[in-house]
Image 1 (cartoon, rainbow, N blue to C red):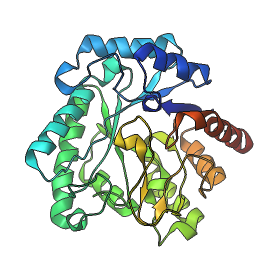
Image 2: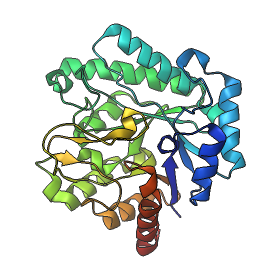
Image 3: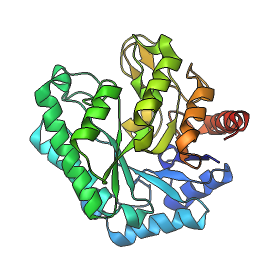
Length: 301
């Protein structure tokens, strides 16, 4: 059976309270956001002892960590900003096993400076691709050296967004330290959202063997204009983000994603994969979980 989890970052509390709240909602796994109100987890303050305390706390609440959030703009055009971001990400990678999972996830980012999710012309150039490829190769090497796997999450406006770009990167960075986070909503744009089933089948036909963890959110045409959309919640930008341009990315069950087909295709090669709910606010968690649980029951996975 597919396991249903949630990001810890939607529960902005001290470590023990976060674990208690999530367990009380009936989840059996979490994607770990390394940020808690009672701990200093800035880059230089992350230690093996702190990471083990975090992982053991969730284990004690029957919430094994399925993956670690490392979201950052890995190709930020400012050298100092990129170095700081990559230092934090590689620190998480080195401590991934201490935190409870080998998998650390990030998108590839953008050469824009004002947002991690908006398009920049350099993103789709050969020079931009090569710069990103070199960073991903280094992250995959670091991950493998530390018993971890760097999971790439694609997003249409980032350097790696389309299926073809994803395939090229995996061909160019052929490493056991590199895997894929499956989130089909991140492949949709204004030009292909009306071809929902065709795109979903293309994604799984092309990429299924690379997948390690999955996400559950939704996708729809935006009703809020072309601006970048964020929720007003106490969370990182990765968790407040709700889309940009013509596409909106709401919580599961609030958009037009064909969840039956998504889960059917996901379960073919990954019958026990964790699927992690996102893009919501804490009061909406029970509804979103009930929606995903019902879909899993209906599909029989």
